[in-house]
Image 1 (cartoon, rainbow, N blue to C red):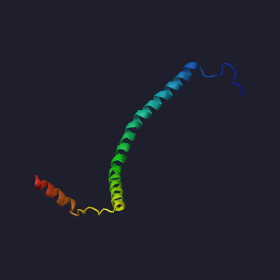
Image 2 (cartoon, one colour):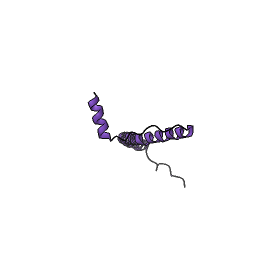
Image 3 (cartoon, rainbow, N blue to C red):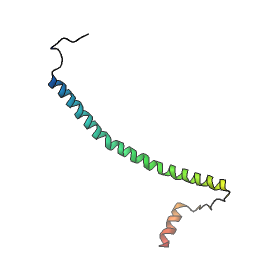
Image 4 (tube, rainbow, N blue to C red):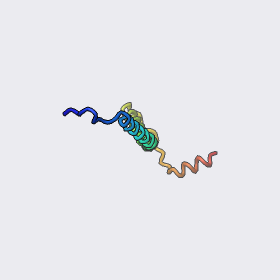
Amino acid sequence: MKRLPGHGRPPWLQQLISFAALVIATVWMVTLLPVLLVVGLIAALLLIPVLRQLRQDIEQLEREQRGDSSPPLDVTPWHRRVWNNWHRR
């Protein structure tokens, strides 16, 4: 169905609606960007132990394939290691 002439939106109203949409989108993006950056930072920090464990597993698998023996495992509790390192200085 065709529109009758003279019943459309005036051009100034169309520009006003476009400008309002642009302002709303800009404010939304400026508000959303810091949230996305913080979420990305938290995700990256949570991935550090996962990637460290993955690296250790891959290195252990490579040693097993070469037939090397595994290095000795340090079973000293973390608080004793900190204490020992602190007293060495």
